[in-house]
Length: 356
Image 1 (tube, rainbow, N blue to C red):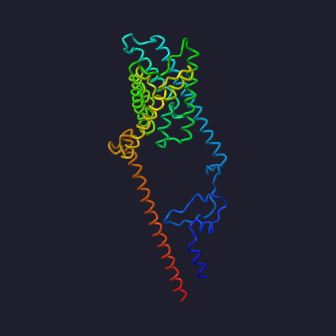
Image 2 (image 1 turned 90 degrees about the horizontal axis):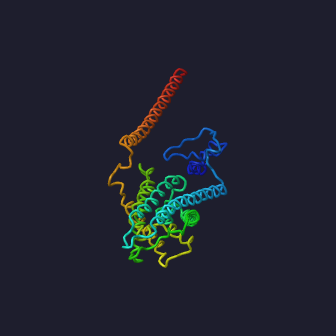
Image 3 (image 1 turned 60 degrees about the vertical axis):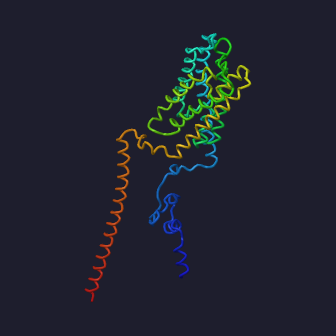
């Protein structure tokens, strides 16, 4: 008898609840006991099966595959539209000014037009696709997001492949639709060495990736304005890099036209290695300031207004007050139950006295 009682004492709370109040459905399993409390459910709880959000393993695989397909196809279309407009603007600028002046000085109008074509095209298409795929359009941006945990590695690989394919298609379409030879390849300017081109691509890409991480990956009150900031960043980068390296900062952007024209320079590798190194630098610095908790330097900067900050404080105060009210109600209930028991005992004693 004592052994059986001792065994009951050690039965886990959830099992004891199942024994004392056997349910007719599995809703009880979703109501775990709160530590320090032991509430027995009086009976079955009605519920809808759809509310449990339970998926079979095969359904989960289909759901994930659907998401990957949407992301990959959306990234393909977005990258295609971005580069098609940018290549079209570059081709037009080169058509009007095919070569720089004989003195070797860059044509400022041509450089500005190309920079504007890339910057504005990126801003518009990122704004259009950021709710679908994030609007990445660049394999090294996928690399950075995968490194900081912003996306799974599988999706990063799929999106990168779709971006490279879209760049080839965009270059082919511009080549077909515009007269003359396609002149949108990235090449080094006269006097620009391979090492200089490599480091230029590295630092320019680092700037672009860091802007993307801070404006888009970091969620704050100005996140919805991120496409403008990203487009302006590319615009400024192109103003510097168009003449010297072509301002690639995107391996897909350089690879697509080379495939279409079937022309690869011997230094084409700098348009892959430079952006990758720049992405790693930007990612490393981003993770460094995140580790140091940069948000504490200027606290409250991400609150839209002072009213919003006050609302958050009031919500915390209300939650605390509800918790205190709950404790007070529990105390009052216990006191009430105790009074009822004492009155019952008093009534019982009086009845016993009358019987005597």
